[in-house]
Image (cartoon, rainbow over all chains, first blue to last red):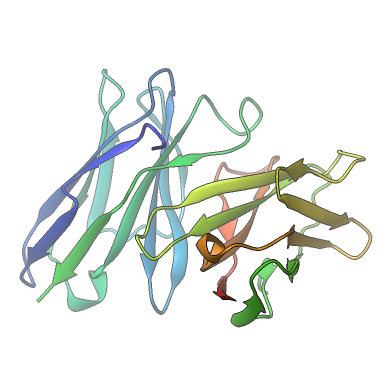
Length: 115
Length: 115
């Protein structure tokens, strides 16, 4: 158990809908990262927050947005869902940015299925 | 160009044998970190081992060691005395410390340990 929690574990929804994925980092970790794992794209970095502020952005679609709240939990919002958004979404956390901590600890993931 | 290349999509190894999973990387940065993660069929991402670009010794963590050859830009994972529980997907990854904080993953190698 990495100490990172993600809810829900599974999510099934329809095209055009909007969903919210939730992540609670390990106690004491200030950085939260979101990754998408799909069969065709592999594991891709989406976005990072550090202590409530957006710090780095990767291949995140405009239909997706995220935020980190004062209690450090983070939410990833996916809207106007398409079939191709079906994937495993991971949240990871670390103490700080790259120069402070090396590894990121991954949560169990949320499996999103868009029908 | 791919930053992380894992040339072995799948491998079959007899239990108790040692196994080497190949990884080559591409970066022009001097400061970077290399990681290996394990993803069993249950889906979670498990951190295995880390090697910093300035580390002179190869990293070791129990049965895992990282064969780091900087000039060749190679970071192979060696698993000694393989066990049935080692059957999983293995990802090599890199973080370039002078850039944003994302970890770039390779496409993975699926390892099957045979009894």
